[in-house]
Amino acid sequence: MFELVSFVGRGRNRRQVLKALYKPSSPTDLSRQTGIDRSTISRVVLELTGKGLVECLTPDERMGRYYRITEAGKKSSCGG
Image 1 (spheres, rainbow, N blue to C red):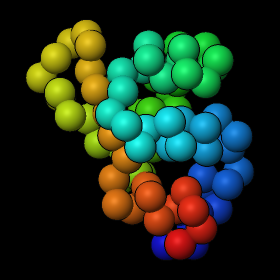
Image 2 (spheres, rainbow, N blue to C red; image 1 turned 60 degrees about the horizontal axis):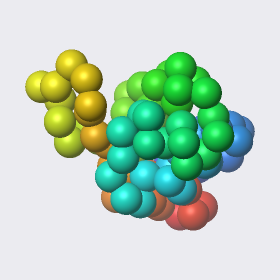
Image 3 (cartoon, rainbow, N blue to C red; image 1 turned 30 degrees about the vertical axis):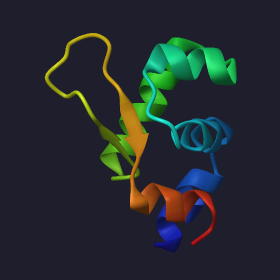
Image 4 (cartoon, one colour; image 1 turned 90 degrees about the horizontal axis):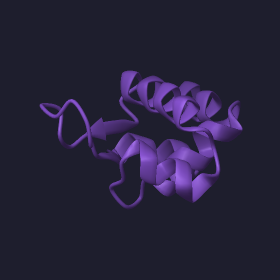
């Protein structure tokens, strides 16, 4: 678990995205909320999804996908 906490802690964008995902959001919404470029948001969301910290709620959609933080993501974003 501490490996995931460390992974999140090493990235300012990861922390911002996880914090913003307490409410399901699309990458476009996340970009507007955080001020982070949409392409960076997409990369960060893929990283977080790969670690099981974020899940896609609409995986069959090519556009307009929505994501939310998982329980593991909640634990990792607050340090356990």
